[in-house]
Image (cartoon, rainbow, N blue to C red; front, side, top):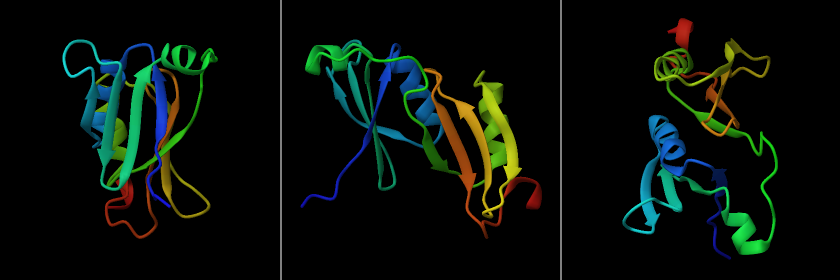
Length: 134
């Protein structure tokens, strides 16, 4: 059985949403159409994959309307939560929850992608650069 799976983000502005995820280290590896406004962009970051498609896509493909936000939550590991949040804040990204050490040992913050979906930014326990612990 194939071991590949990925989340799909429905976006009103595909390019803007792709740009947000590129700030988190994702890189585009596939695009449709190849020229002009993208309707689908496949992104990769290490072994993780994500696709960004137009909000009209589920209606066109399966007859389903996209509901109100949030539509999903993504958990992304970063080297330094505090620095990542500050860098994103300077580009206008909404910070939903400031970095905090969680009871399970990770340092976690929440930001919103351009579609309003929550994105957790986390540093694993034992990560040398965990914001103010560095």
